[in-house]
Length: 257
Image (cartoon, rainbow, N blue to C red; front, side, top):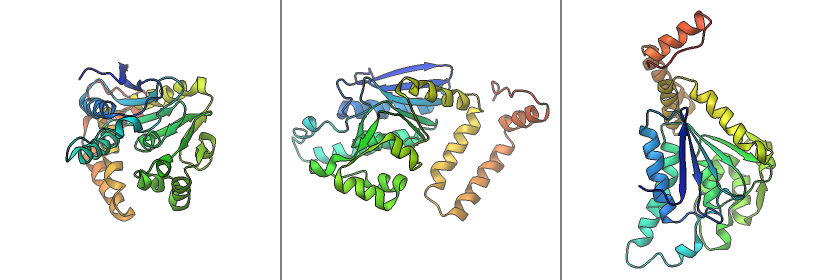
């Protein structure tokens, strides 16, 4: 697929996906289709170990394109199809076999906020802010992810009021991992990405698979499941190399694994 609303750059095992639909990176059908295609392809690419997602300009993502939404239903099934593509757009991010770091460079509104919540690691610039204005335009969706990350009271407060919450406050609440000056945002994101890219890609992929499955399980069952991954990893070339490097006090070489 030729990209019209995204930019994709890959270097040294790190893919950078940039939302690039001026002026505010609002999500239309084309962007969502491109996001599904891009994240699915990154899952399969051997030259990619980790993904960084950010936005072009001063806005990360202004949410759904309301202008498109008003005219998208032309025949029966159109709205159902739209909802399916919207869901799959978010799932493509969370299901990506590579860790996804979301670097929020400005306002993340509605679907833009939810897009961040479906990533693995979330950081934001100090001038970024977030809100769910769905209640003000007669829409719904994303409440489950809000409560998953912010808890019952905060999730519902933000959804029922449409209030803005700052990156600093999300950092204080433990929702995002870092809140940094805008000029340092990509430096911070790429630093995390390089740390992950230096690990065994096989082990990272299996650990992410464990996280995804464990999220849906009770704690006891989740830990037992994760131990099955540990057992499987224990016989891999990547684990043998990692343990040998640890004992021999050298940097591990994962090129053959």
